[in-house]
Image (cartoon, helix red, strand yellow):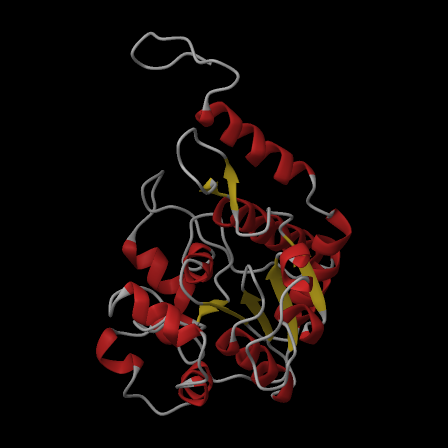
Length: 266
């Protein structure tokens, strides 16, 4: 590897160590877990269901990563709220994921149906809100896929009143194999590790799962709705509108902004 300023990188440089950690974590992804999750997703889509994706804090980035994405599935609905990310304050977001506040509100807005699938993303798998969302999904009849860090989650206590951790609720677990605490690299003079892995590894796992689900559907003659970038070929906004039209009654973010929160729940 050669740096842009012409300096040669050392194998001990933190940048190289980090990239090696990414490759190592990717190599540890368990394909049988992805196949199991893909079976669940393809069964939902074949039954005309959708996939709900939920995470808090940085895990909410992964719910957005698989939504409205070129090369991705159309039938994916992220469960979003300003309180889940950082628009209303980073510390406040951390407090919110540790509480049960607004869980029922989020569920009602999502509009779960029993033929749907739920994906809950939480690296620690211990905080109250992700666990509650998984329980609410199960209560609504959904199969639940957990994307989590099993090593870390097994070593900590739940913050949910049920004392359950996310992996103990899910029908299928996708283990990101990240180090406990997520950060992977030691930097001289800094007393704690840097270089988080969970977003990169989580994105790879989720995209691999959706690719496998798409292949399973096409092998059964069920072509799933997918996106292509409007920035290549003859892509257009009209084409995008056509692709999402079928799901506007189920996925709030495919409707005009004025209708997302004001429309009647289906």
